[in-house]
Length: 70
Image 1 (cartoon, rainbow, N blue to C red):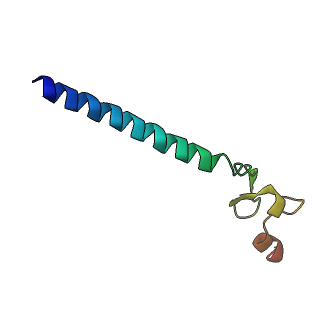
Image 2: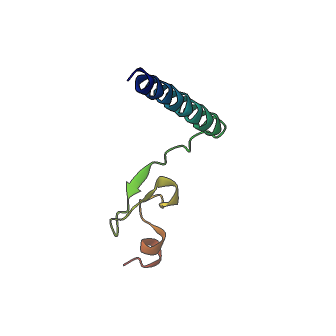
């Protein structure tokens, strides 16, 4: 019985060391690349699609709505 407890104890320690190593490796790979900045989106006044603000015209319309002006 004592041998079985030792085996489980050593297995638990090995598993914890393995998990710590995996977290350390994934933490190192993520720190090199900065996260992408979020883009502000707005709704097109013509069709209602949500697009990045930089792609809308000054009056708030997308390119397709600007070409098909009524």
